[in-house]
Amino acid sequence: MIDLRLLREDPDRVRASQRARGEDVGLVDALLSADERRRSSGARFDELRNEQKSLGKLIPKAGPEERAELLRKAEQLKADVKAAEAAQNEADESARQLLLQLGNIVHPDVPVGGEEDFAVLETHGTIRDFAAEGFEPKDHLELGEALGAIDVERGAKVSGSRFYYLTGVGALLELALVNAAIAQATEAGFIPMLTPALVRPRAMEGTGFLGQAAENVYHLEKDDFYLVGTSEVPLAAYHMDEIIEADKLPLRYAGFSPCFRREAGTYGKDTRGIFRVHQFDKVEMFSYVAPEDAEAEHQRLLAWEKQWLNSLELPFQVIDVATGDLGASASRKFDCEAWIPTQGKYRELTSASNCDGFQARRLSVRVREGKKIQPLSTLNGTLCAVPRTIVALLENHQQADGSVHVPAVLRPYLGGREVLEPITK
Picture 1 (cartoon, rainbow, N blue to C red):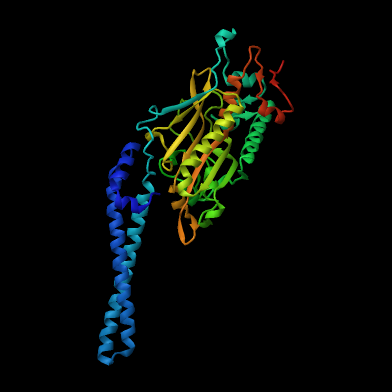
Picture 2: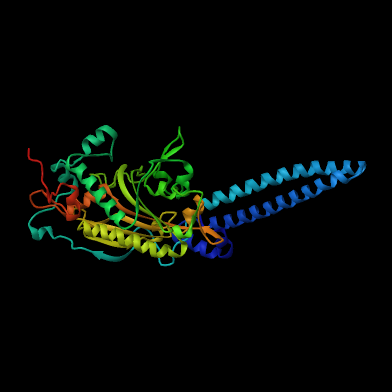
């Protein structure tokens, strides 16, 4: 959540951020009003409590007649205090609920607009000219089936649409990707983490996934658990309700977990193959840093993602995501989009988000430097979302005979294989 002091001191900035996101600007005024009620009800409660305490000191010293009057007044004060406390609690909760609906303040350099209004910051690699090479590229599903690597037919039979099996070399390819990604992250100083896939509501709410993203979250109502859509959630909540000493920062974690997404609103979109699925595995980078270091850390996360994609020998572009396409918790987000030959366009493979103190305030994660205690900043960056990475690898590294070139970074984890060969029947 945002800092309430910012809301009080510069509401126009908050309104501008909401407007840029395409969100309800009226929420700002509603929250200002609720905050005023919260503060005035709190002041009223404190005033009555102080009066109650002062009266309590007078009663033992009073004479019989005066004591009776004071006792009558004490009874009335008791009722007034109870009512004031209830009003304060109601005002607190009303302000909290409105505050939870407010997105993070958008960074001033983010391009304004919707999904298609991103800014391309840089491009890497060379897009292959398959026509010049003399063959038509196959899509990842045709390649994966020929390699004995992907089985979506049985995935649908067992679990429904948007589920799949990785089989044989496909399973080995996932393990190679995960191991190589974790190796890169560990070398960069990240602590490897295997995280829970089920979390309590506060963890999901605290990271900002129960607002605009709630429709894509799986909820187990009987147990009141949520299935995570990314290990960002348990990593953000790892230090929940803790105060971290400034000299311990930065803290960097690389989480590996299964991820679950309902993909609501994507009916008929990316239904072929494994590009958009309900369950997948992912390696996620997560950083806790001092507020003044957040923007530099954002650039570092992006640099590690570019290092990873370059090591996989993939052509890709880096975009500055537009305001209307940001998640609620991000103030700025960079995506790396890999070229997908059979689609003839770049598609998102990784993302890096700066959440400033937004998640830390919700989860009560703070940093102490001397006598000063304040929310720290959190950032997250996808290193390897496995299915989409496999899609990009198969399509970009395919050969005319249906085999697939293996980038050098993956060979140690694939028994030294330089090529994945189709299964001969």
